Image (tube, rainbow, N blue to C red; front, side):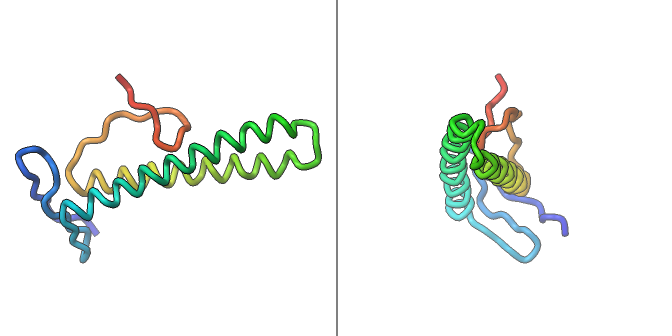
Length: 109
């Protein structure tokens, strides 16, 4: 189902977003964006800790568990980026180019 046309204020912030049968106002969209940002921060910490743990356990029998933490963190980060992209697209906002494997991505300049 394709989102309906979006209304934006002069400043570019969404007034209402209609996603099929779901309609969100600007404060709700901003709250979701903030939650995604917080989740990205959490996943970044998990990725850093998992990577350090994997290095520490490099030759141990528990290294596979650390690798699983890293892989799951990467999948979670990709999901956060995908949801954020879909939210921005439904609001009619253009996303700045993102690259890298961090949860929040790295903005291209």
